[in-house]
Image: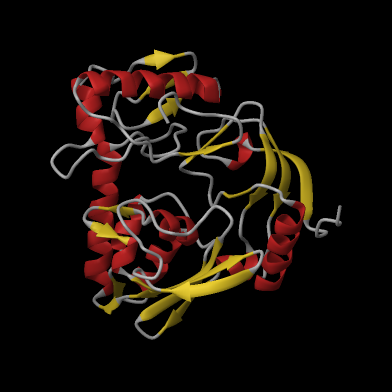
Length: 297
């Protein structure tokens, strides 16, 4: 076995790295700060056959209670930087999308306002083609740099096959950097739009509680997952320390920090069961990490 890069840590609790706050330890954890460090890490991972998950800010992730016998990666340093490039923003894959929106607003650049409602990083948002309030990452992505243990590639939304909540970026790849093509605008007007989106998000989604974000993809443009599950009578339904939010039924809350991932999976299974009785087969947005699975997947 080859020696891991010196910045790799062992047996790090995943719960403290995720927004929902559940899950056991990761066998390896790394926070690379440069492209060179990331390349070294990915080559080591590939050579050793270690499974990998890039967790960003820890949203959209549910880890097994027993942990993850692999490598968890969070980009930092220059891999989380945000810089202006004319009417574009060049940023690391680890940059917070909310921070990108703040900088874009300061610089009078419009197009990424929707990102204020997405609690994740640019890299994760590209990989999942995250979106909100009518905007998606594929609308603004000019180019992304994607690294793996045996090479790299770059391209725009079409090259990455960005689609509704998905792309062709694999679990063995990392979005190391991205260039977002925006439009010059008025900072005051952009800020007003962002404030309105933030207000709408606060009114419509749970706040002050731990969640991993939206659980399910919307079944169609006409039917939201939250609407469906509310119709199924699931708002406020709880199992153990996990509860389907009484504010928005497409969110699961870790009530008082007492939930386990097993509780969350049980809630998801019940939601899928009830949705199927309504003739709808729900597909989850949340990514599973470790020996954890939803019945029916």
